[in-house]
Image 1 (cartoon, rainbow, N blue to C red):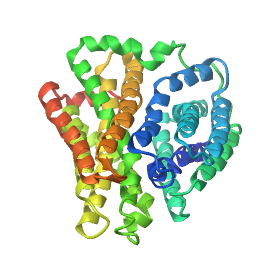
Image 2: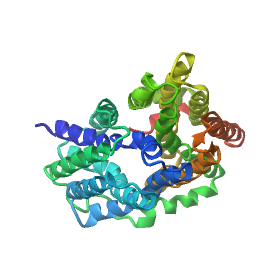
Image 3: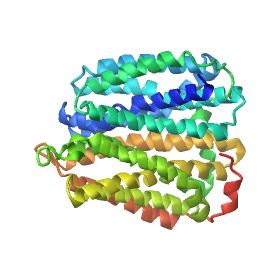
Amino acid sequence: MTIKLRLTILNFFELFVFGAWLISLGGYLGGQLHFTGSQIGKIFMTLGLASIVMPAIVGIIADKYLSAQKLLGLLHIVGAGFMFYLSQVNDFDTFFWVILGYLLLYMPSIGLANAVSYSILEDNKFDIIKVFPPIRVWGTIGFIVALWAIDLLGWAQSPNQFYFTAVFSLLLGIYAFTLPNVPTSKSENKSLASRLGLDAFVLFKDSKMAIFFIFSMLLGIVLQISNAWASEFLRSFTDGFPDSFAVKHSNILISLSQISETAFILTIPFFLKRFGIKIVMLMSMMAWFLRFALFGIGSPEGLGLTYLIVSMIVYGMAFDFFNVSGSLFVEIETDNKFRSSAQGLFMLLTNGVGAYVGGYTSGLIVEHFTNDGTRDWQTIWLVFSAYALVLALIFALVFKYKHNPEALKEVKH
């Protein structure tokens, strides 16, 4: 088996075990465990909480104390135990702590899988810039395949999704031990503060970068809203449209979002070069506005279904134009000595702090518009869409940036 194929398998199953439960979780919590809106929000808050510190800690362990591929294997093997236990949990308090325990292991494994792939490709004299992206795209494909598998097996409302994840997490953990060795001390010797990007706070002296990072955090709030509430929203149509495709195969419908993501990522170089980071970020914010607004007027049949499908499609622009373009902006605009820390700060603010706040506050909003167990989804989605629209308007006014197409040529990705 070639190195590229082995790493393709690694990346495929790294996100496969994420997609097997993430999207269907919200509907399961609301439909089977009958958790309140605020409780579901707190469950999804754990994604942000686990992303704040653990990736940096795991990175230090992989650098200094344990080979990265072995550490990756241990994370998934132990994580399998958490998932197996989670399938038997029905009360909120226990569920919260068990899912947090799992995510403290899983979230840092994403970056670790990338690091393992980079190191092995480099050791085998591959051009990482050319070879890794086609390997990494199989991770997104794995996420989509897992969504379809859970949907077609009829497990979106079943604890079997956690057993399923546990089995593949265990197999992935064992597989990681078979990968070529990644010696310790291969990357720079960095402190925890540096890995978190805290030393990049000096960049806040530059008003342009300060505004960018603040809005990155504010936009990061919306990242988990779709993951948390899309399946629960579609489940709410069960009584009125029990036989509709959107209800019976909600995971497949939602997977259009990830399919769109793989398409829009290919358009980023064109849009960035043609319009610049400010316009691209505004496009992302307006796409988030459309994503939520279309949910607000969508339904499982007729024109309403068209609205839902279009909402899934614009997700690719909303997600990619923010995450990928934002990372490239940081790469272009920061001094080399702060570049790595600035990337860490960008991830901390978006996937950590932003996701944490987003999970918690979205739960409060859903709970506020829930009466006698019935959620006013139209109002809920319009509140989320209004937030994205206000964010876009303020960003357009306060973020000053002169686009330089030539700067993109200096970044080698």
